[in-house]
Length: 300
Image (cartoon, rainbow, N blue to C red; front, side, top):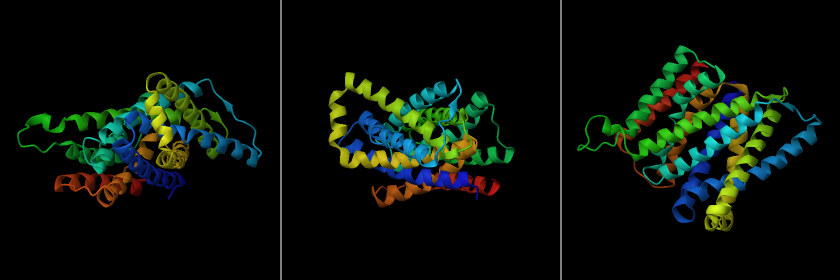
């Protein structure tokens, strides 16, 4: 398989572990803001150090950046912050595995955002596979209540949060790919780490400053929860490096589409770690999304 697929599979593995940790923190120690900020506080400095080590060990010069680099970085970072806040809030409304699947609306939305922002397109067969995954998402967003009729069966608080996080993540993924393309070097790892360091430090400074002004108590709780929050930062760093490498090598729509294999991992986490039970309808929805991912891997 192409290297970008391996990077994507690595990214979703690390990301699933991070979401599990964030779910635990949001339930017993931190609010949505604190669980979100933890990933930046404990990962951004490590990424910055990794960038300096990579440049020093490879002997490469610092690459030039185009004028569009920082607008892409800042827009993507802001979208990711609000997407993460939406996801952490989503974890409190429904099962862990279902919450992750709602987030995967980003796959279809990335197709349209990528077309609008970067002018990138996908094949008809690839689009069909992504639509199959969307059917699974709609099944999972059905509240299943017999007292609810029509479209309201597909619109509830969980669905709203999932769709919002999906749109924001679609935007951040496309913006991040746009940012990596503004780094003037052929070294894909350097492009990925440099962009990630710029994003992480801007998120750390921006969200940290906001919390210092308006939510100092939560900021203190993040530092006190370092034993778990530190692992959030490390898994976030590892997953982000994989994501950014994938984005430098392939369009965001295909990367996010293959990334839906995370649904399978989240299902295992939901059952094995959080002891949650899923309905037959939810299993069908997850099965359709898994089939969509498999189809994309075979097509590409």
